[in-house]
Length: 353
Image (cartoon, rainbow, N blue to C red; front, side, top):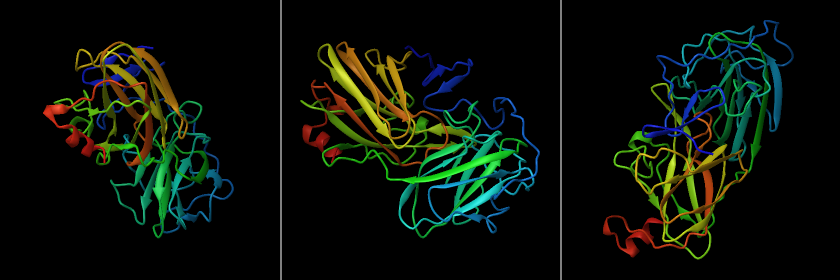
């Protein structure tokens, strides 16, 4: 399936006709795109609910944890931009202190209104939450609910989970917090991407591909067997605009070759193959695939000779903690090693240690 590309930032048309950039979100704080407003029940709070503030947060005693309530009877104590700001919706707070290092999924996908979700570590840090998401990929009946996936936590910190709403929205919520052992563990013989966490895509001189000037790619050495690469990604905000860390890897084929590209990640992952034979900018994805968290995405393509780029990033612009791991594998690549700027083989090998 071909995907239209906008300028230096890849994008494809959604079913609704909206555009989704693969390197940088097209939304802005000043003129956020309009969102349909879901009906918000105004009934009194039901059952056990979160606390009013961080100081009175409802304690999560252990995982998995399930709770539900209604935010409409509470006060607007907090707000964060991710990417929508200016909310006056009421919010509730939960507190969790982990006994061991673990990874959390915090899920509001079964809630009945347009939610917003964010997490503080140890204290209220306005403008700098540990993680924040408004609309999560494939979450809720219309995609207006929130989920944070792969959030790394550990003792002795306490994490404050704030359940908020878009705009003035409030209503019934269902909270599910689960902890899990991370996937995408790095094998000892894999190449390590070693990129600093969550570089601004327009300034990513590490492996930002065609989204940077000059373009920057991570060259992959050929191998008689599968090549494995350990990388990290995540989503973050710059001046209220959602961004995601995208990684571009380069291979050069000497002849027509069947390439098997696989990736498993601690987030909902999007992978793609791009034709680099004419350089930047690219106008199409040659092929792409998505997969849920800890589920492998696969692409198998027979590619003509020349330069090809393999792309990895989150499927959405929100809800993925910076530093979330992925493990990718490339099989079938046995071409000639690429040496950038005349670098020696020893220099190139040192990059992967």
